[in-house]
Length: 291
Ligand SMILES: Nc1ncnc2c1ncn2[C@@H]1O[C@H](COP(=O)(O)OP(=O)(O)OP(=O)(O)O)[C@@H](O)[C@H]1O
Image (cartoon, rainbow, N blue to C red; front, side, top):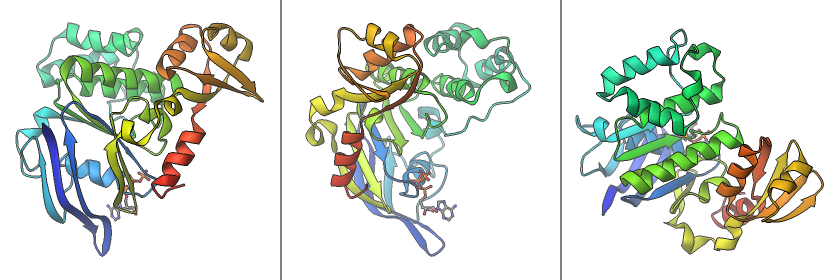
């Protein structure tokens, strides 16, 4: 079943055409990575899907409705933007009280989601005392409370460290598995996003360069080879004994399920400064005309 259908979707800002006649479909329960360099049109596309701005021409339906005109769609769709918008001088607990009345949810539901994202420890803190990453996770937690059918996330992990980024990815995966949520998530870093995505929609200069299942584009073994930089190489190698590892300068090359690898290192208090699969980024993005 398709939840989003776009046909010759075009967006112009004045004389500048940011999206050129895009046609695509998004399947229910898919996680679509929307990747492309800065200025490719990712935010424009996601804002149109979320009903925040209107298209110039073409057709678009989201859950069968026109997102620009629909009154009901905002209930089914959660939007996560790259920067959190939260009241700075309230405590997290106060924000939760507001959220409960807004979303008609219960305190325990909120706490459940905060627990998943390791946010419960901040209940008594004012928002202004939290790091940007923590604020962003809080915004994500709140946006999940209305049990959305679709999550539209525009670079939601841009301000987060590696461990927090993976907490967000794992939460999105869980929501998809348990509640059948459909996710569209953009990033200009492709490799880690591809490890949780079912589909890739790559755009450059407002044109779709690739739109298909990840499995049709990338060999599975390529998704299992990552380079990481950590604060303590010895401890990291110790924790990752059951994985194939190789030390290359200040990087560790590791093979395996990257989500497991990140969670083992995080549990053992190894800080990950950098994580990338540059081969994947280069070869895939080269193929789609970027990089
Ligand atoms: N409100 C606007 N008015 C005029 N031009 C705009 C506006 N918003 C975006 N653009 C232009 O449209 C193009 C696509 O921008 P968009 O923000 O959608 O790209 P993006 O892929 O999300 O990039 P980034 O990763 O930098 O956010 C860019 O050339 C941008 O300058």
